[in-house]
Image (cartoon, rainbow, N blue to C red; front, side):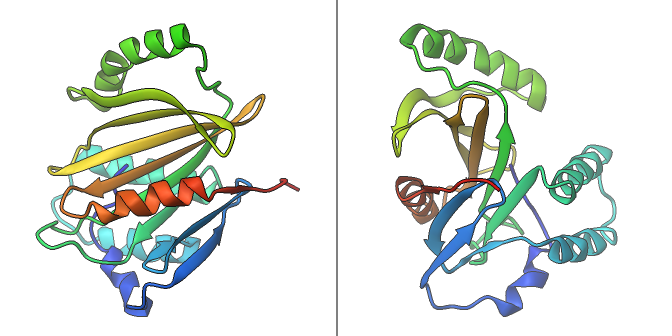
Length: 204
């Protein structure tokens, strides 16, 4: 998922020291990421929304997409962590990680994984309105939790998505999606290292 333009209004407070940061998610997990990653708060989301209101012209599809993203975040259905380090020649794009909860089941059996991977390109193409070809589609284990992993090209030029769906409980899965610029492969290491160190906490 992309998060473009005007996040720069939030970067004045970002530190240049790449220490480790502990991030506790409302979805009951703890992530450890370098200090250049920052969880977007509701007040910061308001600032981004206000800034984007002055952009002209804005295609209706982008307005709708931003509105849906904002609503999900305000309703508590989605969290967004963004990389405060600006990417050269990225035209306002910022690497980001989104977290959302779902009741969908992670495919675990080999036959399930094979059939799901076969069906996903056409499903994603219809959903996203563009041709989607999967670079990765496989099952894994993350911290002894079943995981389903996808990767494919992003909507913005020179960006890619890596998505992990983790089965935390019988009827609760967590989807973590990294959207990154191909000039900044370090964030892939940040993301995968955070997953390997992921802590699952008991929800209240």
